Length: 117
Image (cartoon, rainbow, N blue to C red; front, side, top):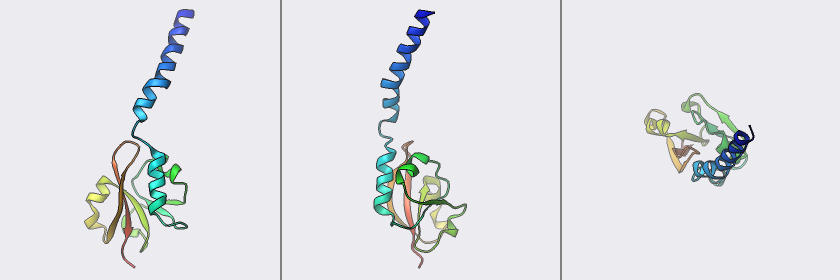
């Protein structure tokens, strides 16, 4: 029993100290959240549609609202799109690319602004 417990403790320490840091390298949600804060206006909500990256939104640390359709994006408002939404942008109207960055999984996300006034 003691040998099993010792093996489990060693495996747990190796996992926490080696495996997790390797898995999370390059997935810096804090840097992505800071980049969003840098480009999005203070005092206005950031709209998200299909993005499911709570870590980035946590570090964004400003109001965010979920939309079901990008066509409902208010004029001048900012939104974060995933790759699929960005590739379908022609169907959404007038969207201006503000910045491109990566989410925690390494997939691209796009900060856009509705250029209609």
